[in-house]
Image (cartoon, rainbow, N blue to C red; front, side, top):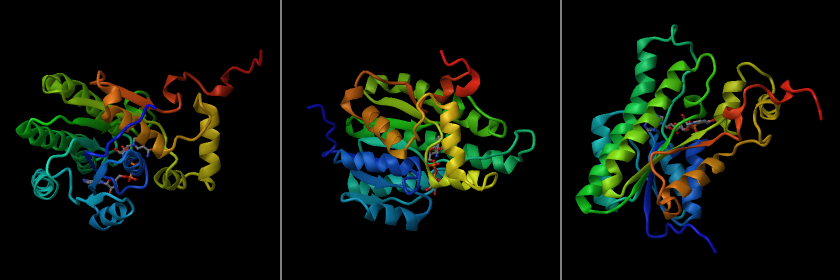
Amino acid sequence: MLQIDFSDKKFLVTGGAGTGVGAGVCEAIAACGGQLLINDIDAERAETAASSYPHAFAVPGDVSDAKEVKRIFKAIEKEHGVIQGLVNNAGVGLRKKAHLADESEFDLLYNIDIKGVWMMAKAFVNQLSGQHIMGHIVNISSVHAHSSLSKYAIYASAKSAVEGLTRGMSIELGEMGIRCNAIAPGYVDSQNNYAAAASWTDDPEAFFEKQNNEYQSLRQPIYARDCGNATVFLLSDLARSITGQTIIVDAGSSNQLHANSFIQDKK
Ligand SMILES: NC(=O)c1ccc[n+]([C@@H]2O[C@H](COP(=O)([O-])OP(=O)(O)OC[C@H]3O[C@@H](n4cnc5c(N)ncnc54)[C@H](O)[C@@H]3O)[C@@H](O)[C@H]2O)c1
């Protein structure tokens, strides 16, 4: 039977206390028996998230702050030793047209969504290379790096940079046996997305059901765990020959030119 066994491995998931993709990633790693180190800027939620898994520890800290990144990895080294996997999930969104956004909004998003990914990946690789241990990285991009919407230009550009960094680092890390990949989720069935949609619809669930039917090839919702499953695949030896790639977990939405209802001919 084909199985992913992470029972001798430790994984750091940034922003892992979130209700969306990070939670699905943590669930999937735990289901493979991996030990979880759950980072989040919100220390209380990191503790709560860690307490819901059998082998999990909270590692609070801000991934956009260079000093904090150093402190996070020092604490990990002291308390847990070397870790074999990093999932760069922490991220923030921005729904504003690029020509209307201000510098502080741009900087906040870029500092977390791309600079944080680079700083965490750098610290992770340096702790591995010092110990001659192999490990792998999965960065959480977004479908917005492939096809986007009005008011998402800044977010889309940061996620495109995440994929560029993933590709570039995969080339540089290949000789060390470190693989670096990404996943690009579509609209995940999550509290965050329902809360966002509540600003323009009274019934976010019905809104997303309609969107899924109209714009996804697979009409089902995308669960956070679907993102988690793709992530554990990329972290595992099943993906031993895959690096520098992005798996788009979007139920087919980014392939579609128009809504499913565009072609009315039923034949
Ligand atoms: N939810 C989606 O539909 C979706 C789709 C595509 C991509 N993504 C990506 O998935 C990732 C998770 O997003 P989500 O929607 O699940 O959000 P979420 O808000 O549920 O989770 C994000 C977590 O990151 C934490 N965080 C924010 N800034 C941080 C920082 N500086 N340092 C450490 N932690 C920090 C937050 O406290 C939060 O717990 C993001 O990178 C996002 O861009 C989400």
